Length: 103
Image (cartoon, rainbow, N blue to C red):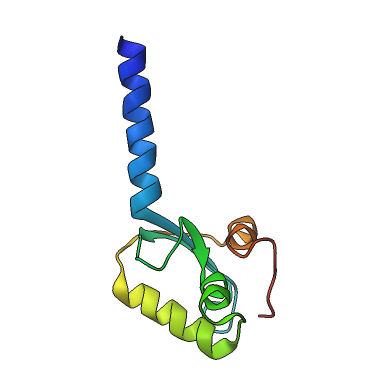
């Protein structure tokens, strides 16, 4: 009984994290030359693992510098950042489906 309760609690915690948190990759660009991975509260337009480039592709079909900058500014302004971590190229590639866009 204890194991089932523990498994249900862990499953519930995973579900809450998946629906309420976004892991957002900020690739190295002029404003942030070393890049960042940010853990933040989820917005209605973000996925569990996301990036500005992935959002630009979803919204307008391509990535450009203006969309990337406006997306990052809008996301940072609209949410609460929980943690700032070093940049992860793996997280970035997961968010973009394996694509890499010019920086």
